[in-house]
Every structure is written in structure tokens, then in C-alpha cells.
Image (cartoon, rainbow, N blue to C red; front, side):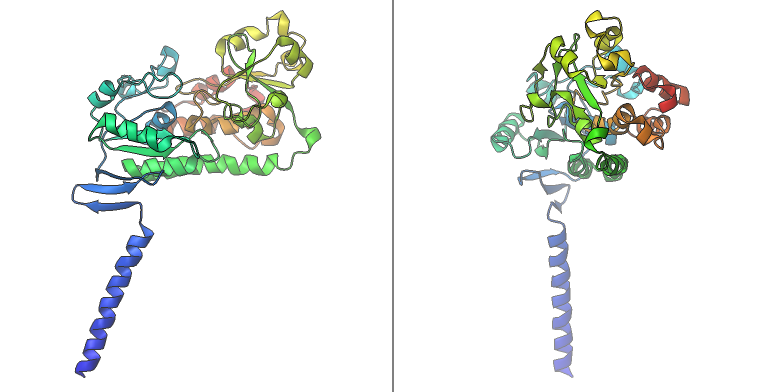
Length: 368
């Protein structure tokens, strides 16, 4: 009898140990201890952070955008100054974040101003597979001292952004909101993946992406900046200029654009859009003649580009409606816009508000 009891006790001990080991195996990214926990960031660094993160800043706009979308009350500074037009769509409580710059195109970040924002953690963007990430993060950590720096994969690819959104959500305690944002993105990605895969080469419309006041800079296919054209199945006329995943624009001439003669022109430059229909240099291009020039909605973040990141999630259905309106009649852009702004930009739009944004982008009312 005593032997049986010992066997039972031994079995119970083994089961407890097995359960503990299983728990640790299934949750490798964080280990809590008191008021702090260790997280493994996205370049496999172990970083000790507070168990409750209440204040956070990011070193680049794409990361800041994600934080604004899923945890605006925890965001304590931004990298850029909102324009007056953008502030129209920013609730008052978020309109006056301190501007601390950052380390991206302009490289104008101020360590002193970041530290003055008193963040619990700093989110550092890293290029997936890029060189020098660890040394850059180590440099940031040295400059920020005891403030933990967490490396997160770059969120510039709208098809891959989900992993980083989920990770940031976990760090700042906004997992439900992160999941909601990913669900919205995946809904429209699934739709456009299915429909674009069925396009024959002859069905694909030609698209020119114009930026700059004169519209004479562009991004070829397979660049982050023109990615929504590729995603929807448009044929980027600048494909022959492909220089890889370039972050800078390619200069072209009006003569080259006339030769390409695109079906559709998309821009994120309001000045170019406001003037293109009255510019004789563009008058003989098919897209201009057919009133098929569109400008990405701008506020509070651009839907198509600049920056590339989670702000482009709402740009997926918009670009689909721009290029192939007949194929996407079942998408109600008024409802999609209202949902996105309410849930992720924290401002409720009326039907008329949403229509103003969409009609201002060049969409026809019959295609909303």
C-alpha cells in the first residue's frame, strides 16, 4: 500500500513538472518577475520591461502610426507635426503630442526630447533581414540608458504587417485592438488576393504612380511605395525602371509618361492632383482624358504611401475601387471608411464625412 502511495505521489510530481515545462515552452517570449517581465524582441534580444507599459514612443513614423491606432492613450510623442488638414481628423486629446523627430528619412531624432517624454519603453524599427540592426539597436539602448529599447520588424509591407502589429499590441497591453486591426486588414487582403489572382494579363489596367508637385517622380513595381498597385493586380507602367525595393523615387519625364499612356494615375500629392486636369503637358494622357486620376486621402495619415505602414490598410480597398471598380462593387467604401476611422483613428464620421473624403480622392459617387 505504501509503495502505491509513493508511486502516485511520484506521478503527481511528474505531471506538475510536465505542466510547468509545457507552459514555459509555449510562452517563450515573456517571463514575468514582480513588476517587470523579460520579453524577447524581434531580433531575439531579451529585454526587461515593466509588466504594465503605460507610456511609449517609437523612433519612426510607421511604428508611431501603429501605436496611435491601437493604443493612443499610451503614445507620448510623435515623429512629425500634423498639418492643419490632418488635425481635422485627430481628436482633441491627441492633437498636441510632443514632436521628437526620429531616425528614418530625416534622421532628426532628439534623444533628449525622447527621454523627456518619460517613456516606459522605446520601439525601434528594424528592416527585416537588414544589416546593422543589432548595432543600431545597441546604440539606441546606450543612448536611452535604463529606458528599454524593443526592436520590432519594419511594418512597411501591408501584407506582412500583422506580426509586428500583434507584437506591439502584446508589449503595450493592447492585444485585442491589435487583433481587431489585423482582422480588418486580413478581410480585405483575402478579397484582393482572390480577385487579383484571377486577372488575365489582358484584364490588367496600367497605372502610373505620380509624386512630387510636378508628378514626375514615381516608384516602380516591387517597391514598398508602389506596393498597393502590385497587390491589386494593376500593371505599374514604371516596371521597366525597377530598382528593387527602393525607398527613393525615380525621376521620369513627361515624354516617358505620354509614351506609357497609363489607364489610371494615382498620386499622394494634392497640388499635383489639383492642377493635372488643367496642365496641357498631361492633356493627351489617357488617364487624364478619362478623368481617371486619383489622390490618396491624406488625413490623419495618407492611405497609399508616405509613410508606408499600417495606415495603408484602409488603402487596400480604396486602391481596389480605384483600379477595378467593377470588380469590387460589393465593397462599401463609405462603411469601410467609417469603421476604420472609428476603430483606429478614434473619430466618428458621418456618411457625408466619409463621402467627402472619398469623393475628394477622385472616386465617382457610383463607385463608393
